[in-house]
Every structure is written in C-alpha cells, then in structure tokens.
Length: 136
Image 1 (tube, rainbow, N blue to C red):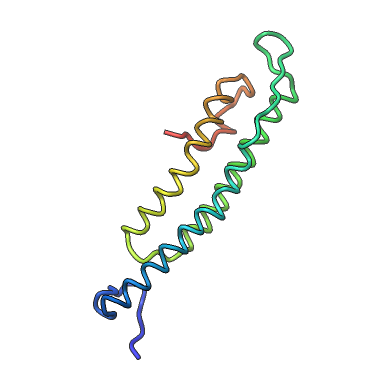
Image 2 (cartoon, rainbow, N blue to C red):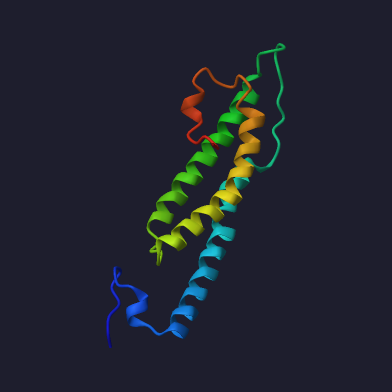
C-alpha cells in the first residue's frame, strides 16, 4: 500500500471517484467545524450591553468594564481558535481559502456590529490595548 504524504497530490494516488468521496467528506467536516467552533467566539459579542453614562460624555465604570470584558473574551476565543485552526491540515489552498471565507462570513458581521456600536464610546484611554482586530 502506498503511503500518502502531506505534500503528495491526491490526483496522483487516487482515482476520481475516491478523490470526490474524500473531498466531499472533508468539506462537510470543515463546514461543521465552522458551524460548531466559531460561533463560540461570536457568543461573547452577542448580547447587548447596558451602557450608562455618569455625565453626557463619560461612561460609568461598570459600562467601561463591560465593553472591555466583551473585547477580552472575544480576543481570547479568537486567539485560541486561530491556534487550533493552524494545526488543521487542509488538503489544498483552495479549501484553505474557502474555510477562511466561511469563517470571515460568519464572524465579521457580528464583530463589525459590536465594533461599530461600542468602540466609538469612550471606554478606555488606550483602546488599542483592547481592540486586537479591526473588522476591515
């Protein structure tokens, strides 16, 4: 039996029907990965925050802390998932790009909504410390 190494092309080793079965199975698994894993990062942004002001332009400490906490949770989860994502062996560059697009299509709108709503508020003098990712 021939051993398939990471760098070998599936076209050389497998017939068309077998390649199709493997790739279809592979695609189903990585779509499940997107649906099961990445929503956990978005969960940290999901619920609306109760924002309160001390004065017209100054947020209460509890509101500042709530925004910072949400960003910290999101940043942490995305960092963890990025590490895990890097360890996944992806068959081809085409599949890697497809997976990245699916993740971005899922996560960016949720992060963008949070980002647009809360990062305009004066929650920190050092916003860049809390905002690791720009939705653009």
